[in-house]
Image (cartoon, rainbow, N blue to C red; front, top):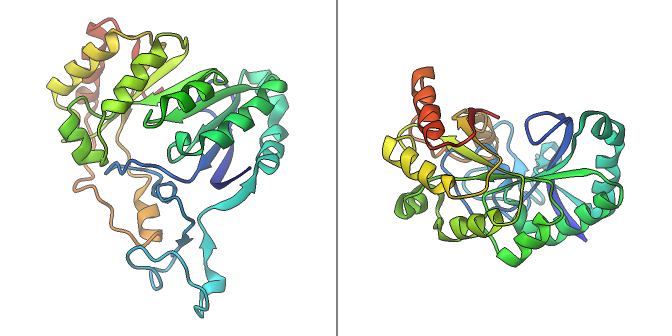
Length: 272
């Protein structure tokens, strides 16, 4: 069992409860315009283009290139045992803080078989587990992984299906169906609402999102303000940043969205 892993972040505090180790996997069917981890989108490995001189477009290999030895691959091909050994290094921190291991991406459902086996091993050691997901994937695989997952951090991008396809390249139908099914039995689903200027921040969408979420069994809703942390990554990949604007919301605009969510009885907060 192997997978392409772009990063293993130890000591994380924003990806589930307590102190955590977050494993980032390659592969995602979505192409969100604001994606902050573009290096995780493609299934195949890539190279970071640090000076911009080698990579333009979608070139992913530089075999025989004079400067090939100066390049660094985006991801590492790792075995299940290798990943398990690294995440278990901080076992004491997990137990003392109520933390654990979070699997992210990309979309973790692309690597569901690997994730399921890893979580099975972690559960044998009584380690807390979490995933970050868009919910876009096969429900049977999702359900099997969710049964091994203590906390699910679930993104919702847009309620309008056509706009969802425009801004993420996929329909939201599978996502909403999977979320609805999952919420019928899973007790720790935290919804994450990436709040993007001019894309999903109009009051109509905020109200429609809140109405939909109100019907579900959720722990809380986190409104995530837009940030540009992915901008430099696009440059290093030789890609153009797809967002047309870098404008962020004012605090008043964020508070307005928060108040709308709360008006529907949702346990909503900024960030998370």
